[in-house]
Amino acid sequence: AELKAFDEAKTGVKGLVDAGVSKVPSIFIHSLSPSLASPPSPKPSTSISIPVIDLSGIKGGSDPSRKDLVGRIRDASEKWGFFQVVNHGIPILVLESMLEGVRGFFEQDDEVKKSYYSRDYN
Image (cartoon, rainbow, N blue to C red; front, top):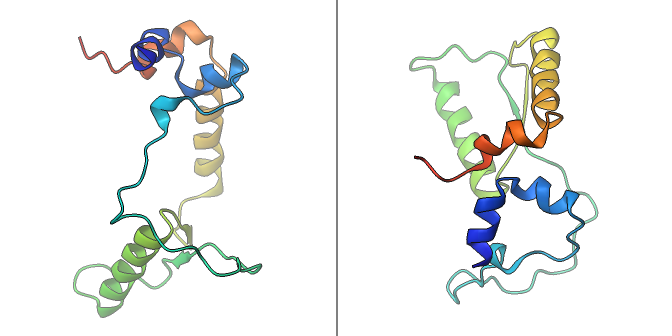
């Protein structure tokens, strides 16, 4: 019932935040199976750094450094789930335009966004 209500609202997680929800809804909480649960971590490190993937010098094709790059991306994806890419060659103006588009989408009227949040594919 909770999932159905969430889907029918078509406002997504942002809609929950806007509505003042202060507790994570149960539809988003999944217990780990014993095989996925990890032992408690030792004392957390205070020097955490996000993996950085440097694309400078990559030529593509069968370039040996390409294989190393793919390995570093795989490692960062598996261990962290994300990474920072540097020296990618995308102009700053393009990046700023992309961010402006994302902000524009999320600042739209909720009625306009509802169709994007729906899992109803009819």
